[in-house]
Length: 637
Image 1 (cartoon, rainbow, N blue to C red):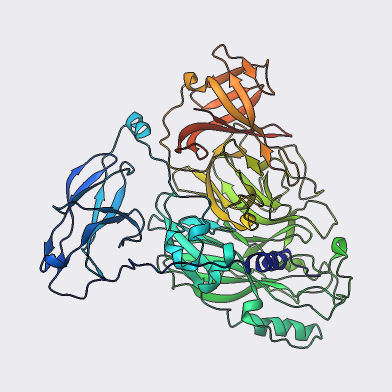
Image 2: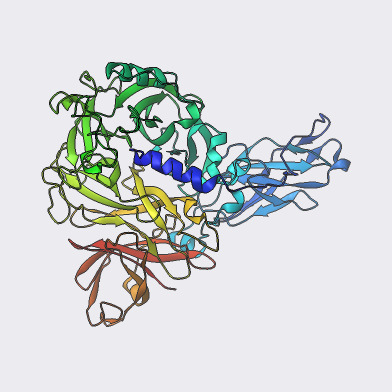
């Protein structure tokens, strides 16, 4: 039996997805440029602009009689767009209006022409749409149009169209160039990522439109196998020579340390077993990459080994492979999270399933452990340098059903927040959060449970499998990144999976769409994640009159592997609730704080996209907690 849950996941992907055969037609408009120096396409010029459109014009100098098509391509993120990006045809005067744009947003635009086989492009024009007042912005709002069921573009040769398709275990940070950069585990529908290296990246200026940049690690780092055999030698085991393609590449964590220095911690899971069939699976490593500029996706320099699994059982690794509660390893070197605290100290937080989540201080200059690490086996005292327990689901149990820690510090509340993924990956995956005044704990849940010293079920539930009407809903929503934009706005990012067997697709649960959601902070300083994904909806003040009417209400409280479905709830103008599970209760609204209190439950409101509407539009959503329950909802149009 394989010890690492991550290896199990990899095998699951291989078993389920390799039978899928993708057949893609050759692209007839590949973007090759005309090799004719007699033809020049002039840089576009703006002839009219509004808050949602730009009218552009261009011209051709040279042999224009061979031109069979002309138009304009444009993008928010890509600085040199091609016809593979957004595009619009031009009229006979080489003019066009690009509509459906976002207000006060800069777009990169190029004119193009096409002859019988090739394209020619102009230089880039960067133009900004007009600023609208808030009411105009909401009236003219256009919701994201990309599809969630991305089977048709899942293959490697369609990667420039992915946007947030094929995202798993994302890590997000905002860089000094104003872009948000997202890095991720290799897992993808049909194993598409195997063609492009490891720890794939995309970036965005608006958290809605994402430009795919490719993998940052072309091959297995050269230090991994020698380090593995060095440890095996110390344990009295023979050397191994595993194939690089058999290693697992999981869960990178990226962090801006300062301008000009970015760090990425990553997980490498080693194939094989310690010593034959009656032992545990090989260990995992956490390594470190650094970059001075993430826009240079090839600029990540490997700084090598950081830490590995530690065992307090010495060399007694002949524990039965199915003895999960007493497994050999204490800490599992998977799922790194990196934090610079409010005192400028640097910490690595990591852990997956084994014993719980561990934290240790690292050297600010090197990013490596502050104290020298002894051999990764021995007594509990001997391996103390490998980290301190900060949260556990069950004290003394070595098989946790929890992983993917993410730790942030919110200066406005004065708390460290630890987000953790619970349960199995495919459907049940859900997110919990606890908090502490100290990086090492104790971390307490919303109900007061001490997750550091006694362990227990962590509450509140932050995300959970769910389903609004007119949709298949989402499952597997966890292993999150939590980040801010530097302006007081916080966000939650994770993958969301389709449920199993959607539309007759036996592999639909392997469809992983990147989800970004807004976070609000309730009056008690707890982060509540919005039920609908972020779509840059203008945040116009919500009036009380808008709250009257029908809502879809979800009790998002924990139920293993169950997709929680919405039910109707009606708020009447007289402040009573006339339908739903809270029927007969009352509601009130604090417009200044945008807090709806219904049935005594504080619910944070926000304008977000109604992703289930056809066509998509904006709506109002809520999220809130009691000490035992989580609630999500959205207003019906």
